Amino acid sequence: MQSYWMQMTDTDTVLELRDSPVPTPDARQLLVRMHATALNRGEFLLGHGLHGQPGSWKAIGGEGAGEVVAVGADVTGFAIGDRVMGRCPGAFSEYAVMEAAEAMHMPANLSWEQAASVPLTFLVAFDMLVLQGHLKAGEWLLINGASSGVGVASLQLAKALGANVIGTSGSAGKLEALKPLGLDVALHTRAADFAPAVKQATGERGANLIVNTVGGTVFAENIRALAFEGRLATVGYVDGVVHAEIDLEALHAKRLTLFGVSNKLRTKAQRAAAVPRFVAEVVPLLAAGRIEPRIDQVMDFAQLKEAKARMEAGAHIGKIVLRMPAGHP
Image 1 (cartoon, rainbow, N blue to C red):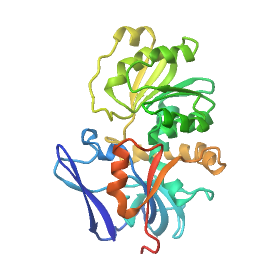
Image 2: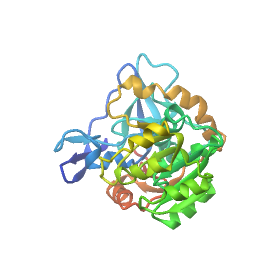
Image 3: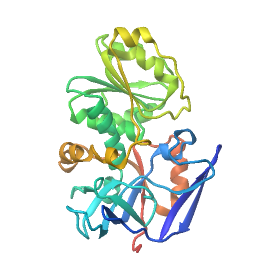
Image 4: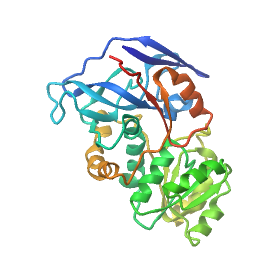
C-alpha cells in the first residue's frame, strides 16, 4: 500500500511516499481502508514533540474516515463494511489500524471528507469546552486564532452549546468567513492587545473560557481578558513561544483555572475515555446537521506536500483534507 512517512530533524521535516505492508489489526483494533484523512498542524511542528526523536522516520497522519475491512477478535459493535471515522496513527495511508475504542460510526449525512475532519479536532474541542472547560450556555468563549481547524471546531461546538464566541485572527477576510458559523465578535489582530475589546464585548466581565491555539505571545493578554473564575485552555503554540510570565495576583484574585489539552502523554485508555460521551453528545449534532464540519480544501492524496505548505502558510479556514484516489485497493 502507499503510505506517507516523515523524518523530522531539529530544523526541518522531510516527507516520503513509500510502499508499505498493509498493517495487521490486533484483537482490539479495526483495519480500515481509508477514503479521506485530514491534516493537523501540531504533527508538523518541530516544537510539539509529537513525532519522536529528531532524525527518526514515522508513518504519519492522525485522523480519517474509511471502510472497515478486518475486525479484531475481541471487537464488538463493528463489522466488515462499516463506515467509520476516528483518530488513528499512520492515517496518511491507503490502510490504517484504528483502535476500536476510538472508532465511531459515521453519520449517514457526512461525506468521507467531512467525517475525516471530525475525530481529532472535535474531540480536542470537546475536551477543552466540555470536559475541562465546563462551558455553559450564555457564557463567553474567546478563541485565539479562530480560523484554525481546532478554532473553527471550537466555534461550532460552542454555538451548539449556546455560548457566545469572540474570535481573533490576523485576517479580516477569515473573520468575515466565520460569521455565518456564528462568530459573535470578530477581533482583527495578531497582537497581544485584545483584552480591552473582550472586556467591552462582555460588559467588562471578561471571557469565561479562552482557547489559546497561538502560544506564549498571547498568554499574558489572555490572563487579562479572563473573567472571574475564568478558564484558560492551552492547545498549541504555533508562534513557537513556549514560556510566558504568569500574573499570580490575577490568578489568585480571579480564581482562574489554567489547563493544557494534549494527547501526547496519554495512554490508549485515557485517549479513548471521552469517546462514548462524544458519541452521545456531539455525533448527534453532526447527524442532525447542527454542526457541519468546515472544510477549507480537499486535495488529492498525492498532494500532501502542497497541503502541508498551505496549512503552514496559514492560508486555510477550517480543515484541509486529503482524498484517496478513486479505485485504490
